Length: 88
Image (cartoon, rainbow, N blue to C red; front, side, top):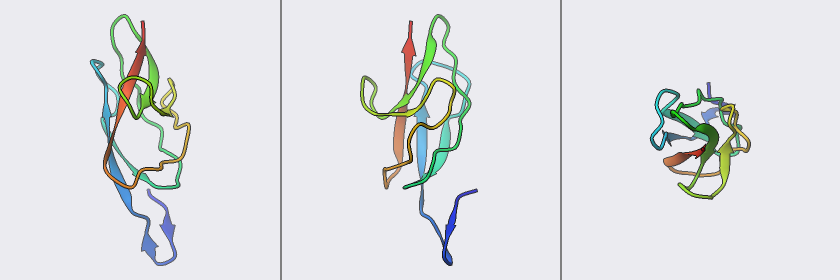
């Protein structure tokens, strides 16, 4: 459940998780600015190890670690995409 402030709900935004060739795992979540990210199920990709979700396909800022735990609070006030990074 998302947090409630005062008498209203905190705005939340849909975050799409692009598995970048992986399969399984979570595909979307709702995030509220300034709040911790909910854990997600990590994807799998044959021959690779999941290295987290980032806001860019190469480089960028990491939002989830390799265990599917959020590593920062959400800071984007719009619908967004996070991209899986993989290690060979």
